[in-house]
Length: 199
Image (cartoon, rainbow, N blue to C red):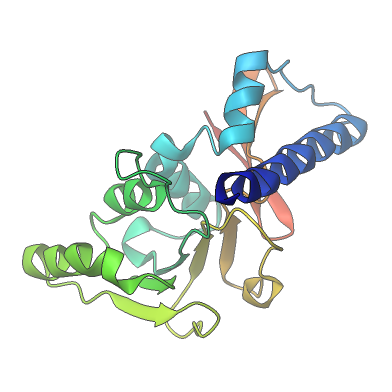
């Protein structure tokens, strides 16, 4: 029963991704989307295919907003669908490994604080960084200038979409590879807008 319940949100996510792509095709005007292969479409339905490049893409996004990575102060909203098996890779761990270097601040909103205990201890020992952990739904925006929303289900957190905070939904809105001015770029949703970065 649990497995079937977990499959329903993923199916909803796949439908949302399909609707978003159809809307993008209607709105595209002068830019042309690159045809997405069945394999790429399947990857997108499973998650964010650009997750392994997140640090590089974040640096480009911050540059477009006139910010440097050393001033990056994220609130990471923990996933609502952790891996079913201990052998599966946890996407949140992958993101933390990528963004941790050079951080001076990070806040994590989670319902599983024990999962982050080794990370918190390691960051303090290696860099002196004190990782702030708060329960989901109680995270404040004090000291934060970006929100990385790792949740799969539910709505985008509009309460975090305020200037000058950058709100990046990692799964709720698809990141699309597109052909723009003869270059293969990635369209990344930031709050209500999108940003084009080099792929």
